[in-house]
Image (cartoon, rainbow over all chains, first blue to last red; front, side, top):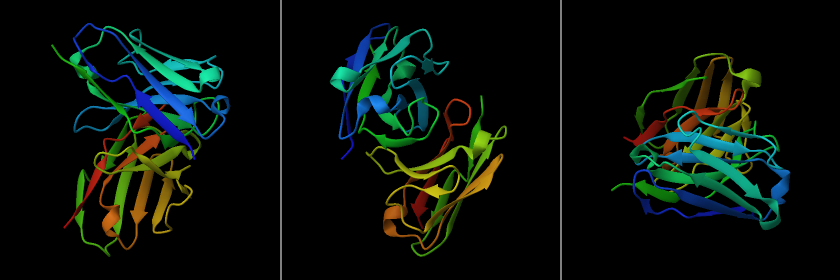
Length: 121
Length: 107
């Protein structure tokens, strides 16, 4: 069974930093690209970032470009999101999601349950 | 960026009814790379449809995706109580964007 489990969400002050993690199980992690998607309270889904199977290509939404960094450790079946210079508008549940392919240009066939990041003073 | 506009914002129907949800793209979606997801309160989204019309594993046949180019539709026949949720479309033909969602409420 495919499982994705996020962690690392906390309350952080504006301007602060945070690192989210997502641990995968039940599939061969390095066969797939991975994504982060967020959802602000009561709002819709917003794609945040992707990373290809080996980490050779990454991409970001304009809203986080230059502040967030996606990475992965295939030896530990883990995906990460380093979030710097956090703003109140970054407050959201952050989901990791598996891409159907290895290049990050497909749909998302499995999602984690999400971790809540709150940016507030 | 390809903007997706979903309509209506909220749809109020009864169990047994047919639901028709629309997703319109600001430009043609490459290769009809359009997916639909269902999200219930407190849960992660679940994949329903990919490639505009291919049902995901385990999705009941009452869910049907159709359309091409810039206009796409999700039809749910004979609504079941568990179908009342929020539905999102996503295009993955040019980066990734989501529509704003359609809430399907019980009338």
